[in-house]
Length: 488
Image 1 (cartoon, rainbow, N blue to C red):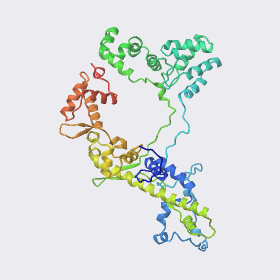
Image 2: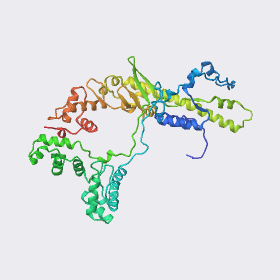
Image 3: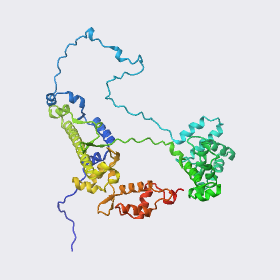
Image 4: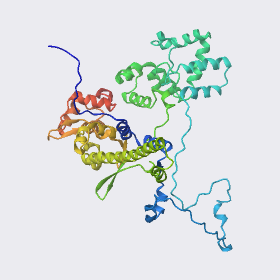
């Protein structure tokens, strides 16, 4: 068979991701705050876009709005009429109890929005401890040792070894630091005790046992059973061998349990109490409200600027005199971009409402009765119902939140896998976890439920679940096994 080069024309369909299509998908995936910033950036770069002032729009009569495309002719200003003496301003209403330092706020004006004052900067654990260290009456040399030790603390507040080979032996930390700094071991130990006395209580510990002992010393309970229990019977405490501990101290098991409850109030990671991470505020993108027995879905977009095409620049495009081809090309591109952005935002709005409305229809029992009635739901189910692609639904639900009568939830919350019930209906995995949580909460603490017993009780309720699945869900709920939940 002879092989040769040649040209051939053919037609075949293919999906091309144009730049505008990519931008439209990005806008669809953006949460409200990010969308707001994107719109404001576009307002600064595109002269054809302008923000609509809804208050001024409501004040303009309808017949005036119809003639917005015409350039208004400035009218002659009316002569100002001097105010009569009887209509003089009463300046006393501008004063509040003769306090000139406070701004005047009219009593009847309640339309303003007041935002929480958030700290501009936050202080991390190291800075927090160094600030306290500067206030202590210690020498400059000890201060330098203290700052070095603070630098060895991890995010939990534990003192880590300066050498990688010393990580397995916490007792080697102080001698290693003394060797590196060229200081006496006694000085390093003294400064470490000073750091362990700082807030939050428990920082500077070399292991969990020392961390708990430091916190009890801060409380002044060195003579308590809880302190002796950690100091002498820490291994038995971790494995909950309360009978052995009671025999060792010659006390009752109930007293050991009370000491264990007191230890449970301590923080195993005190350094996390001083976090440098700023709090994340959630603004719901959607709102679901019950009106006359029906659930209404609407966007929480009152802070998103309303856009329209500027009539002034659109008129400029219609004027051909004195305009070069490059100018017209630039103006035409900006006009097309402005119209496309407005259409895309409106399409995003309709898509989000359509998806959330479908979720509300599928999960109506959840909104009425609670999480125990949450049904299994997948992205494919919603996509099939509204006639869209599954990836579109995924973009709509990614990183967005909805405010409901039962709280604020991420849209992904309503999607979960299912378990087969005896009646043929699927049960949501979130509902199964809720059932496990309620069973453990109501169990007899003297005889806690095992994973097998929980599986049997759930089967009696119509949920067919395996023991290993119960164990997996229990670990996700951070519930201890039955032998660790047992109490006397």
